Structures are given as C-alpha cells and as structure tokens.
Image 1: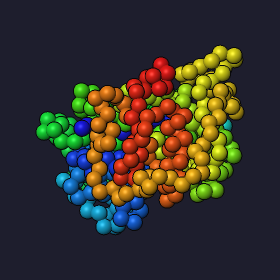
Image 2: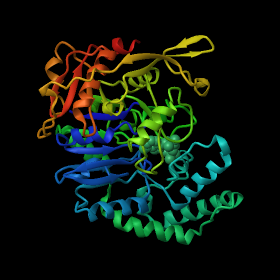
Image 3: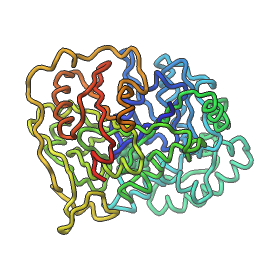
Length: 458
Ligand code: IMP
C-alpha cells in the first residue's frame, strides 16, 4: 500500500517512529519536501541514528531510498550526514540512495541569507533552523536556483553561482555578515557534489516503475501541517508544502498513486521557533522538559509545549485527507490526573472550529478548553504488555474492521519505557475521542472509529 506519513501539528510529532514502524513492509522510502531542517532520531538494536536528509529506509539493507525533486539538498550537509551514518556501520551505496537530478541545491550563502533575514525581522523573526531552507526555496521560485542536474554542467553552474554570489554579497554586507567568493562556493559545493554524483539520477521513472510493479511506497513527510507554506500559521512556517500534496509534487508520482495518508500527532502539542501557539502552556513545557523530553533533534532547542488543539487537528485532517491517525507520546502525560483539549477558539466572542488565517496570536492563554479525566491508576490488563515488533504490517490490525468502517483508522502509538502507564492514558484518550475498543498488537494499540469527519465534527 502506498502510504504518506504526514505531520498534523508543527512538526516533531514522532513521525519517525511511525515511519520506522512501517518501513519494514515498504520497498521504497521517499522524501518529497523540506531539507536538513528536519531531524529525527531512530534507535535500532540499541544504536541511536539521527537523520536529517536521509530517508529512514537507509538503515535497512533492502530498501531503496529516494530524495525527491521537491527536497532542497545541502550537498555539504548531506555528505556529513552520510559519513556519520556510514561511520555507524550502515553502507550507503548508489543503489540504496537515489537523489533527484531536479532537486534544488542549498548553497553555502543560503544559510547566511537565512541569518540575514532573521536579523532584519527583529522580534518578528521566524526562528528558522538556519539551514538556508527558505532562501533556497526562494531562489527556486524566483527561477535563479541551481538544481542537481545543473551541477552536472559545470560551466553553467559556475556562471550561475558567480551571478548569485554578487547579488547575495550586497545583502550580506548590509548586515555585517560574512560575504563569499564565487571560487570558494564553487569549490566547496563541487567537493561535496563529487561524493554525491553517483547517487544523482532521474528518480521519476524509477518511482513510476516501482509503482507499476506494485512495490510498497512510503512517503516520509517532514515538518508538519501548521508549518506548511500554504496551510500553516503563515508567516511562521517553513517554505515547502509539508502536507500530503507535497508528496506528489515533490516526487513526480501522481495523486492517484497514494492509497493511504497517516496523519501523526502528539497527544499534546509542541512547537519550536516563533509564531502563535494558542494552547501553549508554560507549566506543561516545564514538566516535559524536566522529563528530558521535547528538545529539537536538529537544533537542540527546547520546544514549547501545550495541550492538544483539535481546532488545528481538525483542519490538518481536512487538508491532508487523512485515512488514519497516529497519536504519539500518550505516556508523556502520565502524571496528569486531568488532561485538557482545546475544542474551539473564542475570538472576539465568535466561536471558531477551524483556524482563521490570521489572529491566532491573539488567542491566549486559554481557548475553549475542556478538561478530561485521565485514566485511573490501576495496573493494565496483561494484554497491554508490549510484545516485540517482529512483523510490521501496514494495514494490520486496523484492517479487520475496514468492512464496517472503511476509513479511517486511529492508531495510538506509545513511546517511552513506562508502557503500562501509557495504556492507561490511551484508554483515557480513547474515551475522550469516543474511539472504539482497542486492538493490541506488537506493543502498539490500534483503534478504529467511524469516519473521522464525524469524530472531529465537520
Ligand atoms: P526553516 O524550515 O528552517 O526555514 O524554519 C521555519 C520554521 O519551521 C521554524 O519555526 C522552525 O523551527 C520550523 N521547523 C523547520 N523544520 C522543523 C522540524 O523538522 N521540526 C519542527 N519545526 C521545524
């Protein structure tokens, strides 16, 4: 089954865990947007791997991994990442990692332009990851970017880089930031590109061939819906379409290739960087940070934390067309006797069940919140004990109910070691959302429910 994994909040929903879970049954794992602003940690056989640009299937011997045309690739950053992962004993040959020749290149000056833009915004800054993502996408849209294929034509690439360096230096000088010489940019970029050259190819026919051969395609979304350039909390967003649609424009596979969209959200909400956060809650942030949770994988920044926001979740489910929901970090709220969920916004006396395009900054600190009792503290049934994850099936165990409830299914995915406590809160969470009797399998608890439209009310 060709499945998109998409974040339903501001990124960091634990998509990596779900991708990891589904990768075993996938043949090809594909990134279609974003760049090395993304970061997720996978722990396999006790070893910790941090991935930024490399798709998760890279940790497996038998998966093909594709960095699609919609991704912006920092060749220097990617080489460092490949070296690090290879240093951990994972081979990354050209048959295992394919990079689209249409993918745009993040050049060294894009990072400085990112910094310059942040300085110019002052207290309105976006809080970017400073990986040069916005400026690289801006050059793409402004039709002055450089693609991987362009690097294959060195005279063309050198002329293009030289032209941009002249323009960029003028901007950087204004902010007293380091300027560049075309020579150094060309040399650094080509040193990295030579390492990547065997991986660069036209990935579109490769993906179509895999699709026609009925291979399982897994689209690994980066960031989350509220960071989407069109649907997010603009301008406090990233520069790509992080929603399910980005999986098609960013890979060359058509919408008809997609069979399932799994939306991932936490049982609460987090965000890094600036921008509105209606359900943000300082004491919840402090509680989770004290547990050592909620620090960014890419920048190490502490994430702001808040209660679950179903106004945003409802919208995210709509625009992604989710067919299944994975709720992660349910155990993070173990110590709370009462959990809060935001069910609507009250803006100037008007109730909003969908987020308006502006004005979210004004909603603070407590939109319409409903308190829900958490699970009681009795030990879990024996069936809640996690079992090893030997077999991972894309459609199991939600599929037995698919005849009565064709879509979508809900999946609650616990994390952490104190799993029996999670199962209590899973029960509470299921109660809140009106979900059906859970089915347990492989340490995960799956819920099916009537169509999500009814559950989330639109
Ligand atoms: P940029 O993508 O570096 O331009 O950053 C724009 C916004 O997206 C900032 O608020 C970042 O914190 C946020 N962002 C980018 N990538 C991620 C991610 O992988 N997880 C969470 N937030 C992200």
